[in-house]
Image (cartoon, rainbow, N blue to C red):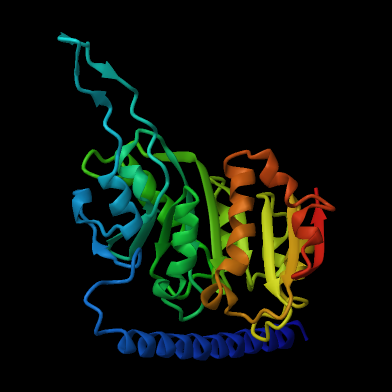
Length: 330
């Protein structure tokens, strides 16, 4: 009987994976059609370019806003001026900490790294988010979401794998960025806060987050978006986890996958369902989920008390009319 149940569950999982691959292929086709319509434009869309990884930051694509702001950087030294035949001593002012304005993207093998452009000109260390793709969906479909994470002050490392369930790709992404932070030839040299690492992913990627965190204590918190993890996989999970889902998700049905995972989580956890949202909302309308995802990372990677309050009972998410079925524990 148990063997028959396991076979049925495997069959259901396979069917869900096939449906999701078809959805992703449809999205990819739509994206290619859109790109074809706009291919006459000579410039790439701001913030979307991806360059081959190289230590030289000058080869990195930056958005127009960053380029404009860099040209207008205030001078740090005021030149001496003549006044009444006397020359005043030169005045100096401290250079301000670079602001997070725009992102840059690097690729190295199967890794895509999206990071704040300001990282290249500061000595500060940045927290990390390791990203996992959904079934059959390439990283390119998630770039708008990943750029939002980077603009909020995170270095985002995405593995190219489209079969991510066991969490190994995300764990490898941690190894990769930690290694880069120790390499003097890398743009990330001494720029990564290796004690502040979060994980996020979509669909099978959400399942990856749970399995990766269960096996790797370096992951401090999780944002699972329409995650296909099971209650068994999430059982005893201690990392603070935000489970986001959609009421119109017919691929990973919330009541069968997401809510049971929330119920099984042992540590701090929050669950909420976006009204009318389909399975692919984080690709088609990433702004609908990015705000709360970023607040969760701010809460548990930056220890931001205001961000933590967003998820309190009676807080912003609980009272947001666009979301329902809010649940919070621990």
